[in-house]
Length: 113
Length: 115
Image (cartoon, rainbow over all chains, first blue to last red; front, top):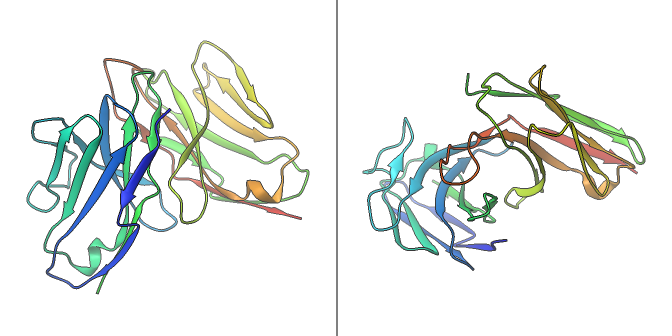
């Protein structure tokens, strides 16, 4: 199994600023991902965080807006840049273990004013 | 073809009832079907998963029924309890290890179990 922690758990930010979300997994995992979830909605994949190389972004998400780092097998960051109220959402870190099970972190609740 | 259709959107049952959540898919390459449970303010947690080589899997009070020919699968919660009140997501993925394909999630079902 894998236990995922995220920091911060929630934040209120002003438009035009940036926020970096940290994700730490308690064991080595094969893949890490970042999702966005609007309250009451399903999960939307933002990108796959690749260790030591550029993340792979899904359609509609770009690196300039959501830069992602993954310096090692257990840690990743997602930055939400130049925020607007439309970026208000829950951001979830996820990890895939070598056994093929995907786990999720508790989420970061972001409100942009 | 990558969609997973989930129904109902919401469900209210009495304690002890058996809520059933249904999902359907089109992509025959899907070979792993997990269900996630999400409580308010928490991230989704893996509840139970099934591969298409079996028609049913039970873990405690949770059962997945799988119909490969119909490309449908469902979650049954036996003897439901108020603590089961949560949002449930079905999902599907092609490839388990190595040849990873991203998980496709259903739209979610909000379950409320009334005491």
